[in-house]
Image 1 (cartoon, helix red, strand yellow):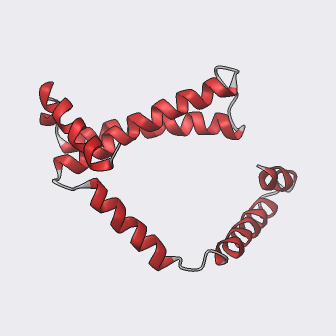
Image 2: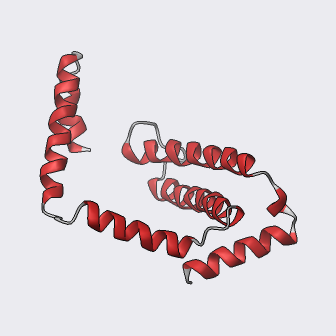
Length: 136
């Protein structure tokens, strides 16, 4: 499926139900709701929350559906604002490549971030969490 085809399908699907008449701000509220669901499931995958259901494959399946729901809202924001997501995503790729042209530098940036996080944990008396956080 092409990105532009998906966006056209979504807009037509919404129009058939008059859901294209929902306010942009309400669509953003729905997107935040979906992001909360994604966050909760991601915390289960990461081990921060107890998985529910206990089967991690089922949790990942739920996460996939919630990511899809979030994507619906983002694409809806785009069509409500007259933005072609395929073009926007292409521009985003170009922006990322221009901003971070050296892939090898990413490892150094990641190491620096872990060092800052470790320093934060130590400063707050959470030393035992450093090794666990790094393993995650």
